[in-house]
Image (cartoon, rainbow, N blue to C red; front, side, top):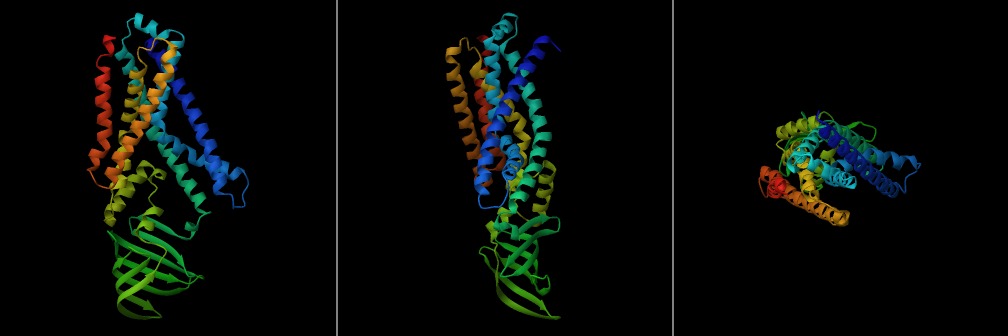
Length: 357
């Protein structure tokens, strides 16, 4: 490895780790305050909100990595500038684009590590965090899970426990559904089988309900069924995709397809993860373009502010396209690739003349 590549790699990694630790610490502290407020009425020690914050912070920081890479790159150039090392590189023949290539490769490799190791680790912590926090909400009485056997719901209402299994979701309807009603002592009260249940409201409408009770059966054309769930409630209880590893997301996608359930959000998450290393590279390139040819410290503050402006703008543009994609206003591929291609176009235009300066 050439000496300048080793030197650039060392300085960049140090800048990245410093900014990462600073951002993680800020998120961790703010999260503790949030958890203390959430648990204000719970009989728990101070260590519990600290523990919850430790579980939740990695997932929050994951979403901040594009910003972290942008700031890390800026501080990398500030370090070089402080010792006049950037001019030494230029006088020794190292061109701007050569340095940009080194930083891009480093960012891409770090992006792969973040996706394959950090993300899967943080999603596991996030899943455990949600389980722990679930104990302090009313949702602990309810459960909605999707697996290869369909949709499973546990619902507690009026002292009765309803276990519901449906093979498919067809828009606002459950199809091929079996409901078992139990007493609080888990004694079977009755069972209901139906091919079509309207779940738009919490008072479900069961069509052609076959009711089995005390070794007898009867059929009712339309039956009202009280529930704590409607379609939105069912979605909310298993829609936290950030708590799922890449492999679990792939399995969930297959289960959604079996259920005839919309896979747009799952595909969105998978595409975002697939393009994440590229986004980090583009943020590094953008930051480098901003910082190149900085000769004095008096305009560094301005360039940092410019970098912050771009990072906030990119964040909102990205979210805008994500909303368009998740609501199916535009094709999913268009929603994912549009902000990235815009950033590629901008970076390419600005980087074209770097070697000329």
